[in-house]
Image (cartoon, rainbow, N blue to C red; front, side, top):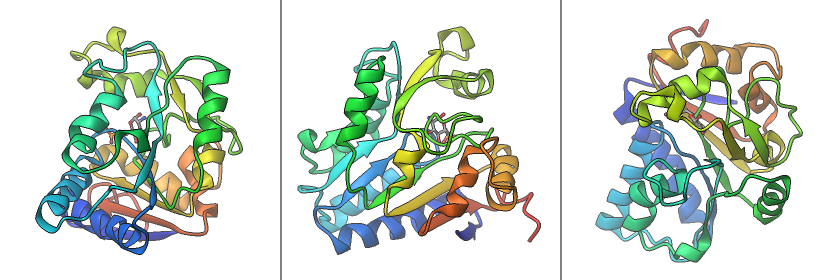
Length: 238
Ligand code: GLP
């Protein structure tokens, strides 16, 4: 695991963009594993800006998103499908048919999506305050594939800011790529900023490999780069 600490979120987004751009430059038909949440917003803004300024093309790029809430409409303003369109897809020249965001609430829906996710060149990840990746909450087996997840109170609480600050409006379930699915990616890029991620980052990097911190599995990934700001790095021993 390679760790890069940046002074702030802006620098983090620029460094993450460099990693993403290397993958895009190496293969015009790159397969990107994408994530939602506040963490990647700056990176997506960099990708959009670069597309507009330098013409980097996504014509043949394919994307697979990590997760989606269960029980809200695809076009709901809070769906991850809407998030991806608003922050990235509608601003670049990607073919909508090449973009994939999981959807559904059954084991069959999850299996079907898992079968589609193939050959991911780079998987982008954020991290939850409890160390979750995608929506793989603590306790999820490391070899789990795409599945339906019951969200923890802590995750619903963290995400209520997108739902009128009302935890009762936050969906209780999600469909998420499993840790086994995520680990199949050739390269993983995890980004995190802010002090409320510092405990999860410490457990991921310095803690034991344990399902109590799902992100600790990345210690086993052959090509994982972690880019964090000083606040998220503040609890690391060195
Ligand atoms: C959600 C998403 C994760 C994301 C995490 C952190 O739970 N399912 O993929 O990494 O939140 O979100 P944020 O980047 O907003 O802190």
